[in-house]
Amino acid sequence: YDPDDSNAKEGEEMGLKRFATIEELIAEVDCVDIVTPTLSHYELAATAIRQSKHVFIEKPVTTTYEEAQKLQNLAAEAQVKVQVGHVERFNPAFKHARDFINAPMFIETHRLAQYNPRGTDVPVVLDLMIHDLDIILSTVKSKVRRISASGVPVVSETPDITNARIEFENGCVANLTASRISLKNMRKSRFFQKDAYISVDFLEKQSEIVKMTTLDGEPDPFDIVFDLGEGNDKKKIEIFKADIEPSNAIQEELETFAQAIKNDTTPIVSLDDGAYALNIALQIMEKLKVNGHLIEG
Image (cartoon, rainbow, N blue to C red; front, side, top):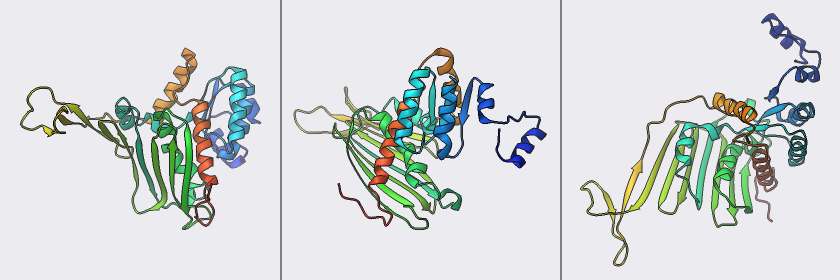
């Protein structure tokens, strides 16, 4: 289905069947993958769910949190699976590091992109930062207590570079920076927790885990040992940097969606996860004024 005749003609020339309406198309399938502009996510997803179809929706899940809540209610009533396309959950570097992340207390993320005029119609928080929001919210098992943010519109009408600070009830603090006017691309996150530091490079698909463990016996000549004083165990530093096999994260997330349907299990990135990330992203945007100053409160 495509409302544009010229686009639809290209599909027909490739032997694809053209449907007259989106409703007719949805009626003929088992599930849909919604990769349209965000403004149309809610209507398309609601249409599919009302026909009891399983739905995969690209991030951000909807335009407003209220729309996301409506989809949650519809999906629960229809008993269908809904997965949101937060693809970084399937990045092999994060998958390798995930098992080592345990109760982080400080998280710092940088997601920087080179300027592309085609992307400035979407706020940088919803376009870039929301990836890191989903990662953080999936690893910090605590409610958000306070949010502050600042941003500067450099080349567009909304902030092109934004920094947000999220404080959780358990004391964890996350500091996020997203920019679409950088000279180079960067997608890095660092997690600090008791006796460990975990670094994830989502762009280069590399991760590094630095752990402090209690020294048992005499140290190896090449060990990095810390003597914490009388009455304390000696600690040594262990560094893990695995050879990570490349993978197709987009294909993998769709495969896990299919498995969730077949096995009647909760998708890895659920509709609740997508709604939560959107809710926090919109709260960050509420803290931003167009002129880039911080809104108090």
